[in-house]
Image (cartoon, rainbow, N blue to C red; front, side, top):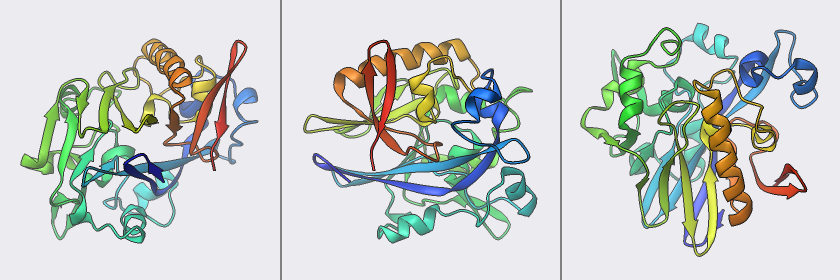
Length: 276
């Protein structure tokens, strides 16, 4: 997809199955099952969308899914079949791991940064050997010292082996003239989304600020995974108003039905108009 002077492609690391209670939090099942029917284990389908951006000669990869380091048991726990798809999807676009210049981690949960690294024999090494990995400094700190709630998703093997390829940043930061990271807290305290702006057009990769379209339509729908749900609501409120005013295209990371869409306001209600 061409966006002004930039090129963007949604690439995917597979489909997982997540517990419905985790995905929809306090929302009763009778409401959410009409949108995302669960399987017999109360799990709902969850995509692992990532984003490739080509801007000013730089190939930028935003998030990289679960990656390829899992054994069969871990793959089964996540409900993913067929393993990691990301490298193959990049290959279909003619992009090799060594072609990636920058990796942006929206945050360091396993389903967003597991592909940062890969196994080579007994070693774990960076998957993208030439890339600088842009990570929020506070997110790195939180991942390095997880607590009882976060230790099941922050894994040192996904970021510690990056060594001097890790570039720790603080707050909103410009990556190129057309690509910016903006802090969108709630899911984690320093979660960042990625904004692409070119020739008056705007695209926002929301990541886990709002992984599913319904989260933007209904502010109170917050997943159990968000560490600060009230902060999530306020962040969504701010971004929702901005998206309507700026006519920004939104990209959803985990929605199996809506990959991207426009947010429209109908009276007091909001709805996503699906694209593609």
